Length: 458
Image (cartoon, rainbow, N blue to C red; front, side):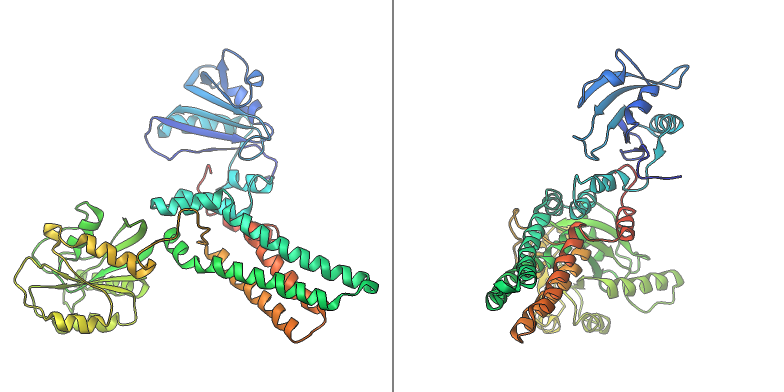
């Protein structure tokens, strides 16, 4: 039977070959269980906290592994429980053998994210910081990592706690006036309500203004490279990835399927999809690729529409411009190293104000202009400073929008002169919604769902 007080164990390093593999234990019995595996100069129970010792892991009869053992005693640990980390040789067999011995002596295999969940449940971090841990692991660029670090360090939760305190003081003032009517100060209470709630709305607005950038930095832009066959889509992908990921030939229809890769463009992660050339074809395999290309087009946040400098615009080109008319797109006139046949005036007309970049990917021309156009399209050429408080999590954004709405309801009720104790209901609801961001008022089922998205061992 699984309980919150079991001593848990898991492999905390990536599976595969490596110099070091780490098996982590956390719980009241962590040191005791590790002692059954450890053979060294001194018993683990006698080892000072936050120190590391050399020894061997044994199965009771023979030595299994050479290891360095880190001992960290509660409460000065990530989980605020006793923690032991067994550093052994990296490799599937060695770390799994050590893990199995830990489980044999009483530990339970940790569930996904359970170490971080215990840090949250034991008050080491709040829920937004815990989600920052997951974002840090998944960060694809330096900027995304900095956003996650800011969240992990409590930058967002600090701001949320400040806003909740403002609302708490407002509710307290209302309670005083309700409980002690002889000191009635209805007018003053309304003034406080307008001031405090108005301040909260302004601050929530500031956070929501960062949401667009923050969400892009966290999740990346789903970016589809589209165009007729043989206009240079695969060459574009190879140029952005700086690797020959896609096959490039002069034969139309070489790319039969969608290829995906993450790339870093000026600190913005792009989930790049190189699509099969969109055209009518009798080839069954290519037709399947074209259908996947159309699906990638529908789901994309950004379109890189490639046309050929050396060919006239075709009806297929114009159809692609029409299909992406209402989408964020950068138009790329590729192969400027060959004589021009395309009508650039018509290209600019079809682009309808969206950026047009000329390139020759085979010769590495125009890539910087393309990156600048992408950054300008989403960030107006710049990103907030490193110390900005970003909101990047979809759950946080939704809760902030709900909190803003209930706060505005409270202000409207105040303007209408409604009784202060009724207005207090909206203020209290705003306080609760903000609390859900940091985990002060959140259901257990949501907590379980969030931590189930973590990897094992974290």
